[in-house]
Length: 431
Image (cartoon, rainbow, N blue to C red; front, side):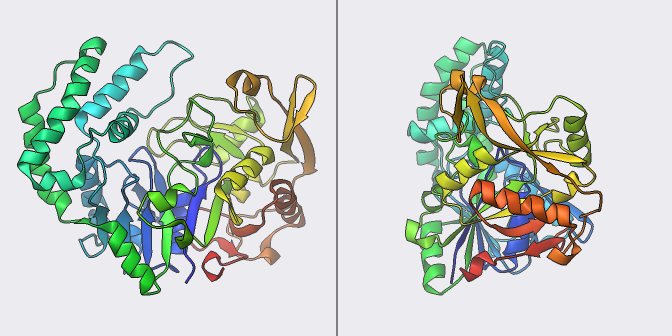
């Protein structure tokens, strides 16, 4: 059985939630492999809207196993609140339907406080645009070997030792930023109180997934954010704090790279970005305003207005290469309905030289000017289309040109937020 990794191939907000939910019908297990509750996935199922942050998108599908892997940083209090909210919408969540890797590092209140204090102290032009939820500091503690992990909640002596080690590091940082000292005993009490809620889901996920693979079960690996926010291959330093590209799927849950059979990149039919950082095709005009209004471009987590621009084929071609994407799911095609002319960025002009990729150095990125080609738009509606026959000729030509420029075929086409408004070209699980 094929196993599939789903990654965002732009700066996030590509519509991964809907696509993962749609693919979940074909999967037995849905495993989240990186990120934290800074990610936001909105699902629309039979008119019901589900907004998820920490939970894998597959939880709204009955009869599926959802997994939070060790590549995630987990805020236990947020997770408990999110579970309660989703249960109120009629979704069954239990230890039989949700598992958390025992070696998952936790986001503590001190991480969010540090995150927000750093952003507030940053000079103009150096702010990263963090959500302030503590994801970055939690990942720092993970690589600094001072995390409190899920398994640590089961033993008081271990928990106290882990907290003490973390506070040795955070104490001087907080003092330097003018944050009040941590009440160590209160923090330990908070963790002991939440422990039973989290430990009921704790499992050796690496072993569970190995057993599932041996039994021939299909696994869907779900990432958060987008590849252009990857800590190594994104537009650094305006990136997230983890690896987002497909290779992280293996280490983020504890399987070997041979477990990955197909990588599906989620790509919006135009480009958006939340927060700071370079954006070569950004539009500060009526077209950008129109894209934002028609696409309802506001962040699921922060509510911040997203920056909007034309489709950047050079960037998507780049992310398809770094993640080994075999096919893309093109989303929000319907937002382009009614545009008389559409533009696609095919590369960049830098100091008189033409580039087919975005360079790494920030100063070179800033000087890159997009090179566009124009295409006629279409006046007909594509919203809700469920077959190629439902699409106008202009829309089909646009999709085909996107495929040529990014050097990757379209496997799925999404024409609205509704689950069933999806055109299947290639089933990733049949690879």
